[in-house]
Image (cartoon, rainbow, N blue to C red; front, side, top):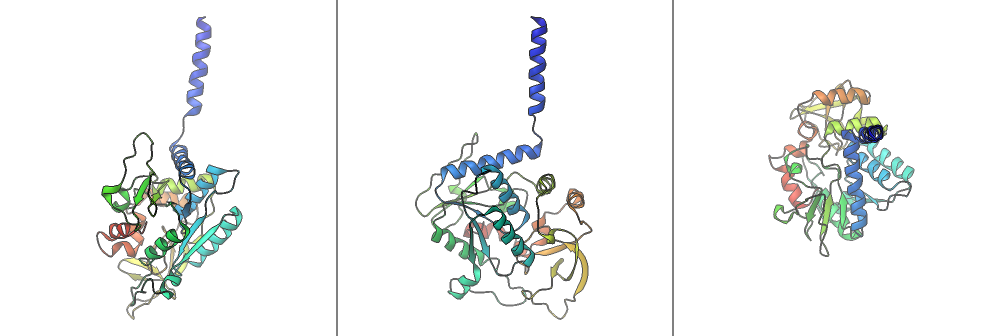
Length: 317
């Protein structure tokens, strides 16, 4: 009898030992749970895709969540027209591989129709114009839940978010209308015209993202790896020379070895000098940095102390 207990105890200990998950497995399981929960709870969800590392990670997790079936919802890209060519090329290739449905909301179309007015001047950007285009697309396609790649470690406006972020009939965020999330229970009840933004990778850090990309061998756009590019300095950032950016006579071009920590419009996304040419080197670089990727490389977040908070209230993310 005593021996049998020892055998059973040994089996239980072995079972417990093999069931332990590392932190990446835990984060993956959490995100997959969110994807499945939303797909079963809402009628017309979609996944917002920018072509950046966070939305690439989301797309990979969503694919895993419903494998071997196809994605049960479309992929939405708000195209500003100022994207990195490498990112658009990656988007089209990945969508084709997954045989997913792509919905493209065009900022240029919003400008042509008079829905928004394009900014003028050397620091003009289409970044803020995305909000109107996004909300129009949500209304047109009747989306009631949209997956976004926001993470709580990015900056303070995103740090306040839960997994489910309630948006009113105007697409706006109000802190008083957010719902508690106790015991992994999510309140997705909405009225017609309202919707929920969902953040499956909310608990991930930038380092987690890169470690998972390395582990899963996920293909990413080449702009994330160190390469030589013509850039100029503005407000402490290195901006790429492109047709979308107007340089002053004092902003001289120089060739530097750089990479991008985050990908947005070419007009407002800065590069960082780097020697990281592979995922292992990127992980080592991120492990030692003390500045978030948005704080270091996004001009649109430097407009004011509350720039992202203001855009969130308008319906940006």
